[in-house]
Image (cartoon, rainbow, N blue to C red; front, side, top):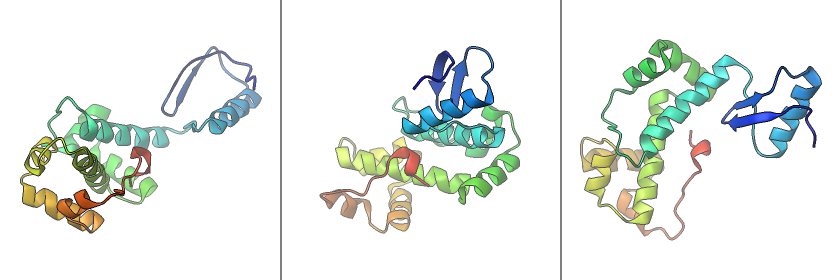
Length: 167
């Protein structure tokens, strides 16, 4: 479908165009993006929510070993140059869960991934993801999904979610 604009780049929630599109061109762009599994974020609050999610996902799923022992409120506040209480309230109102709970859910998904691939011990996973101990990781894992890490590891078809469906 022709949209009447030259698209320079498409990123999560953003499209960079040549010039200013008309209302009809915006509608065609939205339609084309939606037909291809994308969504165009139009308001600043939605963009901020997506930025928060992306920062958390990058932290948790980064293979370069970013320190997950950092204070998430300080990290988000300084990275986004926005007061954390505003970020927290905005996130909770849009997503229905707290930033902290979203972080826990992302960490648990990462634990599930690492358990599935069986490349690390539970102790190494706890250390990699910034848990204070294996007991803390195990307790949070059991509380979140209802199984211990060992029970999860025995499953033939693990209950994993795509990153955009966590939460």
